[in-house]
Image 1: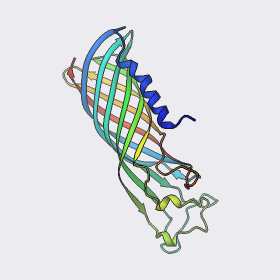
Image 2 (image 1 turned 120 degrees about the horizontal axis):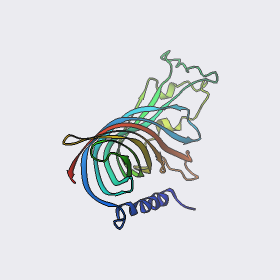
Image 3 (image 1 turned 45 degrees about the horizontal axis):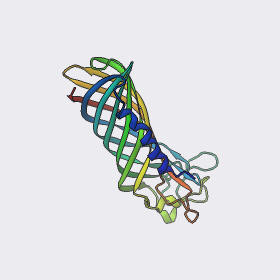
Image 4 (image 1 turned 180 degrees about the vertical axis):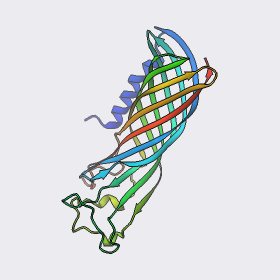
Length: 246
């Protein structure tokens, strides 16, 4: 059986040839650095299922890109980032008729969400088509991503001991009191976007990206409660880069 971490290593090895091609195309030596920032929409694939809506959170950090070659119309680069990222989940606490579940003590619709903070490090192949140094190009990014757990916090409006379990359609609640067990996260990130290069000013990017976690935040052995608890995250982000060398 091929474990997810082995799949991640295999993908990394497949991407490495992009950085060591034997000068088939036009050589480039452009090093660009900059910043990025955006917004996450995240859920966690729990098995057994926990009904959720997408949870929002910020994402931002530093970007480094090294352009190595232009092969025909394709501009080939490698790109790495170090980002602070807010992930987690937000529960839809409803009854069988899709109505909000009311807490008997507070009289309010029950709400629960967990914020989990990470340092995320994506290492991606960056392929672009269009104007390289002046004008607009279209690009795709794809590659492995690592995550290092920082902290977590919970936001809820009811007391755990007095929650309304009678009216809930989804009665899976073990996750509400479980702290993150696996502090190291890993998965695959892929995105697409546009870049506008302005000479002597810099490169402005707009990207939509999806991250699929291969690791679980909780244990997944036969003795554990959840068989899966991995992230799925949509990120919309803006970036700014300027060239150090060319």
